[in-house]
Length: 216
Image (cartoon, rainbow, N blue to C red):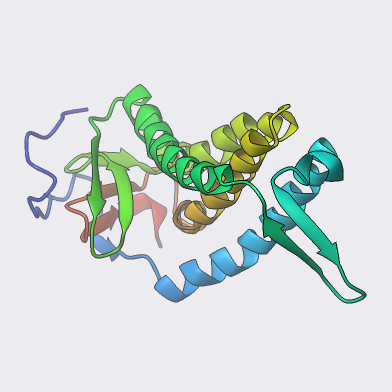
């Protein structure tokens, strides 16, 4: 697959490959993304929080949190200054690993990858700009960080250090919420016919090329 020499900031509308229809724009829906986060984040908090509680137990967790139970709720107070460090470090490490996994899978599938950030969105990316991407490749790339980082962080919930376990818990939550865009992309890709190509022109413009034989 030919690689582009253009910069990620270059906006290009590619020539339609033979056997494909004229491109349609691909855009993420912000309301749907927020809806995905609102659905998956509470589920992740419940599942991974339960695992953290079972793995560490009240006694260990009490070294970093003070729990207070009332007839209607449970509150806690932070007792360790290391919690803030674990929180910031976990978010930073998770962000880097999430995009690294995206980029690694892209590279393993023959694409050249650009890494960067979209300041106005506060989002990071790993993207093969100016290259035609197979639908099937993007399905794997999209699912990879959620699967890989979950498998990496869940065992850390059982670490002997409650701070490390708490950091892994935050990483699991952040990675799950950060996968909202990936889940949205996967849902869209599953509705596209086999052989569909995607093309990222820049951080704001993406196109979908449907095969002529794949649509009625």
